[in-house]
Length: 408
Image (cartoon, rainbow, N blue to C red):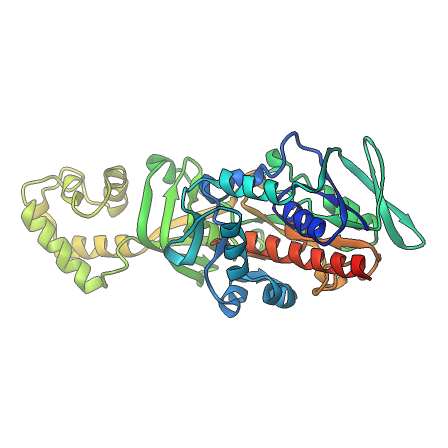
């Protein structure tokens, strides 16, 4: 059985190796000079390749169309993915939030393992231009280098996030040619742009063990504790990426981030802490009296927001001013102007409408012989290794279906 896979990313290489082992002759078309480049930037270069949780918890973290993944996740779940990579010589470790990384902290190890896995496939540098269709069936791909006939075609081109790594939305055009509906792609798991310039003053400051809430028209729609980062344009980091997935139409709603800088302390305990700190630093100016409470980059900004003169002595600060500081530290607001752009989004939300795809086989319901895997589908999840697991599971499902056809 001749199989053509469009895209040599995470899903494409996973499917290629599995299809080769099922006895298929596999050709992988990749328009970039190097395959699987996006893997190298995942997890800040460490590759958070899955999440060490059960299927029920996994599906709770899938933002869009979780039910579509039920069959493929049951057949190739997180434990299977972990065993798969360790069998390929990539020792793994589980970190906070059950995020799974290579022990080496090198995404390149995951990439090399996938390339070894797919060695039996023929990798061709070519850009897929259109599908070859005959009597309603997909019979191959027309590329810039010529035609590639096939018994089955798998589109695994990713979305449109990080286009520098090769995700340019080509898969959507191919799918649309076969009659598929494309849910408009938007950036997901992305940094957020501040309405103002306060964050710019704290560029590069990373906060740990804070609690971030996202407010939509004043109503809380997300809350989680973890890490975040101030940037020259707003906020980023794991908490921000997760929060961004909850944003809907920014033209119709007002969004704000609220940061609890001291989530382990309630207001009464924090007031007591501040009172104790100010007693120790009685003769310090107000801005320096924050030394025990906040990182250096944050202190002048906090003092300005607090409204207390920076040169006011700590022992002159009133009860009311300390209470105002408590409110500030428990509810540091960042008004949100927009999402970050698709060029820097971790993943794309949107893609091929999954109602038109068989969830067990990943085959098109509209065009026999056409399959999909990975981010090109309208399925996305929060940060934490879930999105790469979706790539592994959907690719394995497609490969199993191809194996059944080859056996038949």
